Amino acid sequence: MKFLDQAKIYIKAGDGGAGCIGFRREKFIEFGGPDGGDGGKGGDVVIQCVANLNTLIDYRYQQHFKAKNGTPGMGRNRSGPNGAEVVVKVPPGTEIYAEDNETLLAELLEPGQRVVIAKGGNGGFGNAHFKSATNQAPRHANPGLAGDELTIWLRLKLIADAGLVGLPNAGKSTFLAAVSAAKPKIADYPFTTLHPNLGVVRAGDTDFVLADIPGLIEGAHDGAGLGTRFLGHVERCRVLLHLVDATQEDVADAYRTVRRELRAYGHDLESKKEIVALSKIDALDEDTRQAKADALQKAARKKPLLLSAVSGQGVQDALFALTREIGRAEKREEQESAEPAKPWRP
Ligand SMILES: Nc1nc2c(ncn2[C@@H]2O[C@H](COP(=O)(O)OP(=O)(O)OP(=O)(O)O)[C@@H](O)[C@H]2O)c(=O)[nH]1
Ligand SMILES: [Mg+2]
Image (cartoon, rainbow, N blue to C red; front, side, top):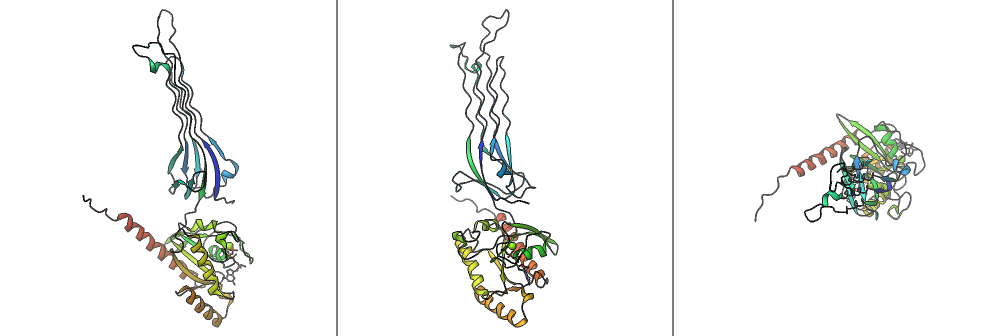
């Protein structure tokens, strides 16, 4: 599957139809009077969230969306039909930004959610509208109003419950492949993963979605490597699993590098709950493993989990630690939303 998490599209709502200037002409009817109908309303451009999409790739191929114009009014008091709307379908987790790519216009999280992003113009009144006692044969009608026209950015931030972070080659994709049915590319060179992958993980009797994102390196916030753009995809996660490759020289430094990048990125990632794990422990003997774990513990100021996605050691523990955190976060969110509003006081 191709993946695209950003797209710029141009949208134009339909213009309203013009009102009509018309007079009733019929045999034996004198002074038939004005009978020009109103123009129809232009169609809106609607952005709708649908469940079965997970990329914005469609918008690489089509970037222009125009709703239909309203039809002009007609004689014999006939109004023009309204223009049809166009629906732009996006995956859950899409944010809509204005042309500057900074002003957030809307956010679509739940399938079924719709926002009217560009309103169609109203149709103009026909001359039948303007008849009055003093002007019984008005010869003017209103033109239709123009529909909104704008350029917007769609930005996808995947909705996952847990996210994997770490340096390149830390074993993130291997972990995702081991615990879910996802089939990310795995190889022993950095930046194997070029776009985020999602997998559904089953731990005990709960399911959650785990996201694997490209590795971070020193200076990623300045654009080094693949940059921090993909960190957007873990912004909405409830917990991060930080993998540190046990086979490298300095695990403490590796840990700190990634933390520094998370901090530089901002968006609250730094304060997110983090589970630290030393990965690839099958490749080490008992003593080195202990030494690396101690070094990592010192740097992270918490006891790291030890795991190997290849031998399966410690993987279940990591999954249970993740589900526990996700459950806690869910409970916290429930409480926050259920908190009774303070009674109003003057
Ligand atoms: N011995 C051992 N090797 C592992 C383990 N996990 C991953 N590897 C190897 O480490 C290399 C990198 O693994 P990936 O899963 O591609 O690493 P990644 O973190 O996704 O790397 P990027 O996508 O480049 O950021 C591969 O050659 C894997 O076979 C493990 O538990 N034990
Ligand atoms: Mg990878």
